[in-house]
Image (cartoon, rainbow, N blue to C red; front, side):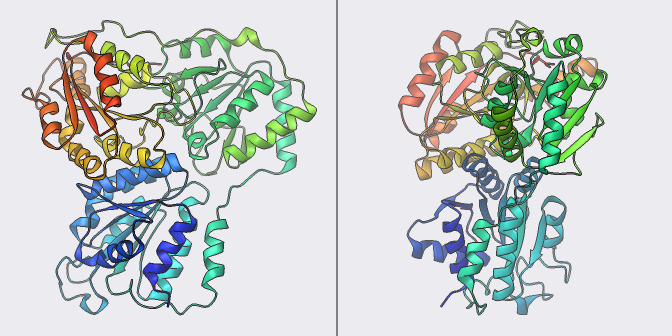
Amino acid sequence: MTTAVSFLFDVLEDLDVGHVFGVPGQAIMSIYNELHDRGGAPEPVLCAHETGAAFAATGWAQVRGTVGVCCATTGPGALNLMTGVATAYSEGIPLLVLTGQSRLAAFGTRAYQESTSFARGVDTVAAFSPITKSSSLAVNPNQLVRLLAGGLSAARDGRAGPVHISVPMELWDQPVTLPHLDRLRARIVEDQHRPCPSADELRALEKELAGATAPVILAGRGVASSRAGDDVVRFARARNIPIVTTVRGKGAVPASTPLVLGHVGAGGDPGLPGWWARTQPDLVLAVGTSLSAMSLGGLAGLPAPGRVVSVNVDAEETGIVWPIDKLLVGDAAVVLSALTNSASETTTPLLRTELFTATSAPEPDEVSSDGSYDEHMHPGEALAAVRDALPADARVLPDSGSHWIWTMQIFRAGYSNAILPGRSLGGMGQGIAAAIGAKLADPDRPVVSVTGDGSFLMHGGEVATAVNHNIPVLWVVVNDAALGRIRTAQIQDFDGRIISTEFHEMDFAAVAAGLGLWSRRVEKLDEVREAVRDALAADRPALLDLRVRRADPPLGG
């Protein structure tokens, strides 16, 4: 007999989903009972908080290239997922979000934690609707299976994103009577639509590229989502076209390639806007970017290029700031692979070496500081030392705050998706849990979460999740006893009227040790590299508390 819950996990096994992130509750006990029976395939990951479960699922999905799964009980458990789910929605990350619900017979009775639209309940289906591709209530096991099938396809189709299903607790263990379940399972696995423009559209683009004298590729978040970083590089090499990434596209393309000039936006390469103005591109091939103000950074204030051709899987989300002249609706990897194959057969690469100017990011300078804690390390120098001590294959997840800007300017991606910026929604603390998912998705690479003291106060409890499951992630806490980015804004924009942005001095290494991590507090610059190497050598969850001064972060290009 196939039940709804057994069908769910059969399909997740087909999709290579190895982990389910969540916090158990009464309304989702059938999920955990099935996980127990299956003996760890997939493995449940007990998170400290439901928000962390959603963040961890986003890290898994980004690195693994498949859907991430998180679950929570009804009522507050479901609502706690929402910031992480909203992050997935804004970033275009495929998630299956499963929340519990009261029994159908209890609807409208104000049952404990009832989350329906009846009797002043908190309607979780409605609450998730604006931040998901679909949000649905299951009412019988056959419909639940259809919702799972449709949701798993929708999450990965086109512009990826989360789907939410609210499930009354009794439905999971009920038998499914739909015919041909094996065919339905097969369709779910195969049903990931990756659109591609027509052959005529691709030939027209080839012709435009061949006629351009100063083309530039602008690579955005969509390149990372479609895992097209290497495709972008091969395509650019075939034509000798420089590559600039957006702030959300940082890390999608290996920076070791000479054609990659850097990224624009917060923490970006400061020389890029000037280079762009001098170069005056006559054709911009915008791949996987909405061309929004955040995407363009310092370029937004410059005149629009001669022509802009957009390759985007979402026809409705492009040309926000810069108008586009031509839209090719397609998946970045599919389109660039087709163009590269065509170029190798019909196109002689044009040499455009005159376009390239060195724009490598400078080492951090002594930028403005108000003198607070000046006896401590400069944050830019401390993070440069962290970078120098990491192996080349490390994956870095910068969290929101001043440290995010420093990390974006200082670190370089050695391979595709080596840096996961997490910029769209910008939730503090998201990288702490996302690093756990990223490590589980690709356990052979070192994973480093660069976070801040403010972020750690919000979601630092998730480091205990790593201890509980023996997941060797390194957390680097940039500790300046302040909400640094907002404090800087108070100094720069509000005449130094500092309020509610400073903390008392805290020892996060001691906190981490109490939670079972290897930890060390680092106060001197010449100790940073050794501390990083020791933390990685420990091969267990580890945390470095870097005591740094309060310094204004670079704004970038």
